[in-house]
Length: 88
Image (cartoon, rainbow, N blue to C red; front, side, top):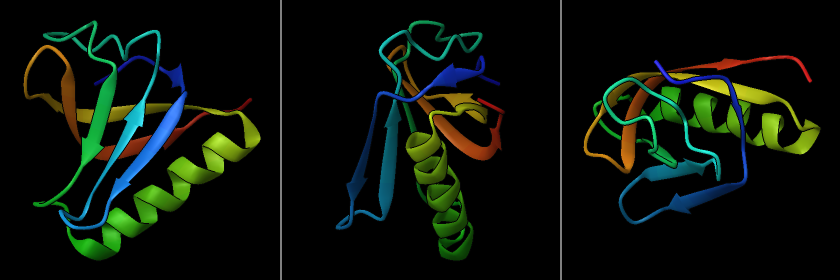
């Protein structure tokens, strides 16, 4: 699980059906606390990835914070399978 953090950028890799959510302060996840990138890809199903991306873009638009559940893949990246939108 990451800390609840504001988003700095969102990147979409259409070729690999992956999107990335970056926080300049890092996501604070145990095991990779300085990781600045959360990403979502398979094994999360396509419909769920689209729903998660919609939530991420909404959070970015309204300035809300996000928290993700998943696992560290290395010190820079966190693979997410669950997202929580927090208030402004």
